[in-house]
Image 1 (cartoon, rainbow, N blue to C red):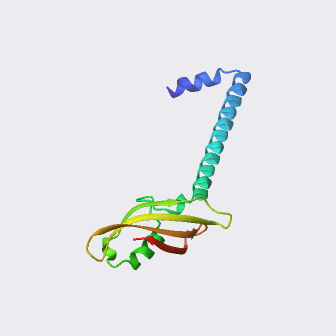
Image 2: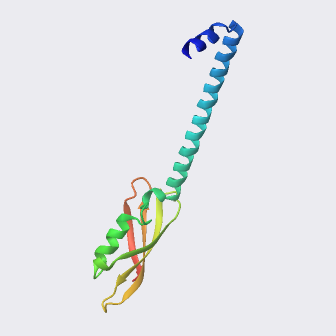
Image 3: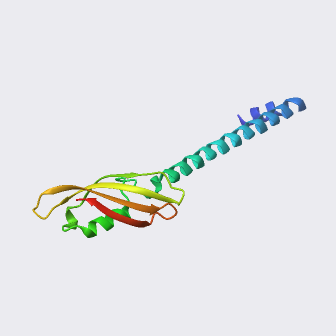
Length: 136
């Protein structure tokens, strides 16, 4: 097989070889353009996720760890904390995101209440700037 391929290659004219080289170069250029456009699309998607604040939320349950820790420390029974939902706003001109988190926790009588906590986090490092317990 290798000998047959070598024989066919030796029978090509210079024009055929030049055309094949041009075709290979065009295919490589097309491949490079597609790779660049794919990379640009991925970068745009990542930038959009950062603008929306999703990089500050857990991929597992959608919570913000800093806000969860702050709320858990303020509860009577920290082990009863159950995260329900966290909503986040797009970045503000000040470079901050506003969070609203709903959760469940036991009250003083042993029943379970639904609580709401709000917070402000920095976009740059997702650090909790301030928070407050709205209802519990």
